[in-house]
Amino acid sequence: MDTLFLALRVILSLAAVLGVIWYAQRKISKGTRAKQGKTITVVGRQGVGAKASVAVIDVDGKRFLLGVTEHSVNILHTSDTPEAPAEAFSRVLTEEGGDVAVEAVKPVGSSTALAGSILSADTWRRAFASLKP
Image (cartoon, rainbow, N blue to C red; front, side, top):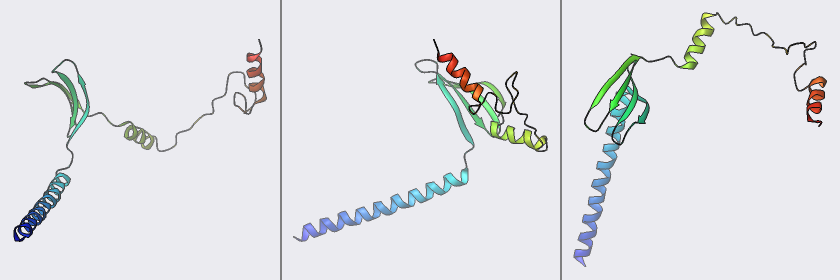
């Protein structure tokens, strides 16, 4: 009976020690990942053979096209990272001063403001006329 309690105490102690090690490892690795930041971004990757592929990555404002094989990695092309579409759009708006005029687009030959819209009676007439055999 004493050996059973001894075995249970050893197993419980081992589980507690492993739990503390696991918790400490998660805290330490999470802290180092947050401090390092994400400096390399894989934009895309495409396989071109059984053991070869092409990858596009961004690193610190530079974009690299890499040829990746089983034995080597080669830089095929280098350029600056292109600007994101949302950033480019906001930059254009601020350069224009925010005074971007939007002109109303009317169908050719329209005489009313509703011409060509779903609210126009002429639109409904044309729709029904196109359905007639």
